[in-house]
Amino acid sequence: MQLALAIYVREPPKPESQLKFPGSNGRIQTSNPQYPQFIANVLDIVEANGGDTKVAAKAFGLSPTALTKILHADKHVLKAMQDIRAKKGRPPLKR
Picture 1 (cartoon, rainbow, N blue to C red):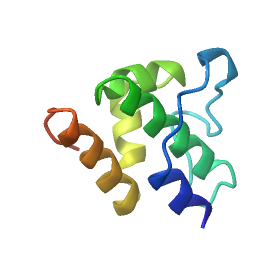
Picture 2 (tube, one colour):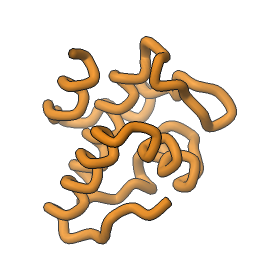
Picture 3 (cartoon, helix red, strand yellow):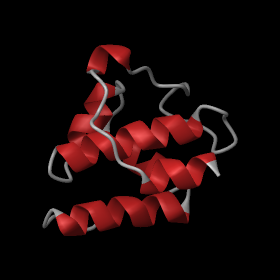
Picture 4 (cartoon, rainbow, N blue to C red):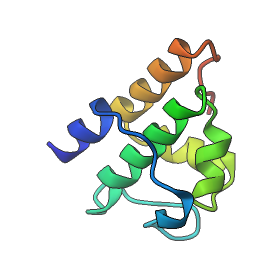
């Protein structure tokens, strides 16, 4: 339920000072209790920045490649990201 809300409900992004990557070494397990909130924050940032994932990666101290790998870990999260990018006129994320 939390992940569904994270995927489908967009809010204005939080200030970067309030964001902290809940994983380690550029990785986070989908079973991590903070995963849904992390995904919500990433999608909020990407939505607010015209579909640009680099801004979200920077906000969490991740490389764009690391963020892309995280997003590809769950097909529903990836679809939400691809939908945002398509709506903003950006190409799909590639692995």
